[in-house]
Amino acid sequence: MATRGRSSNHVGTGDQNGKFAAPKYSSRTVAWLRKELRARGLSASGLKVDLVARLEEADKSMSHTANDIHVRRAQLVDGEAVNSQEENVANAGSEKSRTSNSEAALKHQREMERQEREQIVLWRQPFTTLQYFTLETAILFHGYLLRLMENKGKVLISILLTLLLVALYHTPGAHQEYVVLMEKKLHWCAYWVFLGILSSVGLGTGLHTFLLYLGPHIAQVTMAAYECYSVDFPEPPYPDQIICPDEMEGTPSIWAIIAKVRLEACMWGIGTAIGELPPYFMAKAARLSGDDLDEFDDDELEEFEEVQHARESGNLAQQAWSTRVKVAVTKLVERVGFVGILAMASIPNPLFDLAGVTCGYLLVPFWTFFGATCIGKAVIKMHIQKVFIITIFSEHHIETLVSLIGQLPKIGPSLTAPFQDFLEKQKKKFHIKPGTNVPSEPNWLSYIFEKVLILMIAYFVLSIVNSTAQSYHKRKSKENHHKQKV
Image 1 (cartoon, rainbow, N blue to C red):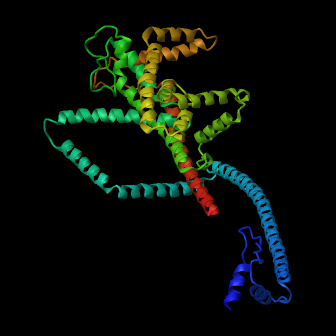
Image 2: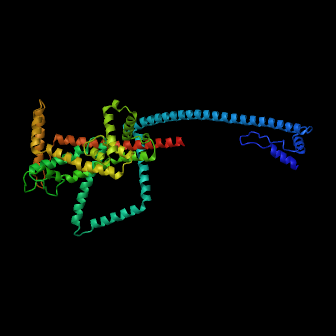
């Protein structure tokens, strides 16, 4: 048994490649050779030379068998590798095809949803629009309520400060003089900031509140300054009403008039800067979330995506002139940073929304974007606009303008009379003493202005309802997309 165990171990010897290694039998004794032959089931008769030859022949046959097994095993492995590689290529191609088809289907679905969303307006689907508006308003209210509950400490501090201010406001004392002054200034500033915010959203029509409120206010102050020879108007009733002071100081300079309207102009500019934040935050949220810009379905984001495609296409020279201008704006903001944003905000620029989207997508820090926007809009741009309005409405320029209108063929004289009548009435109002009742006379310019303003505000309210309802539809579409992914 011991001998058979040794022979078995000896015979089973092989190299690491699976090839059989034959041992040297000539050094063995005849007795060992015969035992090894019997253990293998072979004939043990004959001389030692015959025994050795018989064992070596048996080992050669075993070696060929082992080599054949190894070759077949290698061929099987290679075949499996080739088949696996072919399967991987086929799988990759099919996966790419499936991805391309799914992306095309998703884009088609989004386009259909966008077209469906555009139909959700009060004059086409009034009941659906009102229903979606109500549901979206409830969701937003619930979200804001949850945020307040998450910041109970800040809410508590705000409530305590509000109660303290209310107590100071109603407590009599020497501080009431400053309270009244501060209240008046805060109301005045908040009024112009609110109008500035509305200006950025365009009152739903794209018409600037500068043309409706701030511009006429600066023009009225300019006309009063040249009529009264002073900018030291009595307060009150200024700014609600402009009345000439008793003492005249001489013809005021343009810098005195600029200083008179600086506060309201700067507040309006800050409001416009605040109104530029939504595109910035939406683009920043899109970048941080890793979602496509298509997910957000906003006009400014779509415009930015088109500009990005134009830049990546490589054939910018063949693009439209407007597209090249938009690409130049994004490159300026991307390369120059704060100075580029400041330059874009310092001039009347209809493409500033695109600059805001670019800053948000490039993760420009908030205070870099908002600081440059505030300085550009509230300081530089506002002074340019103030100088323009004051120059146009100075006394001699108004007279020149009225004379030019009178020179228009056929309609000139009929237009000059109402303008002159309007200017004369405005000048007389500056000299009315406080408390004097003046009968109001109808004026067709004021009538038209009031009606246009009412229509614009009404359309603005309707646009808010439509936009909120479309936001709910957009919310439902995004929920369906996430369900499909899961």
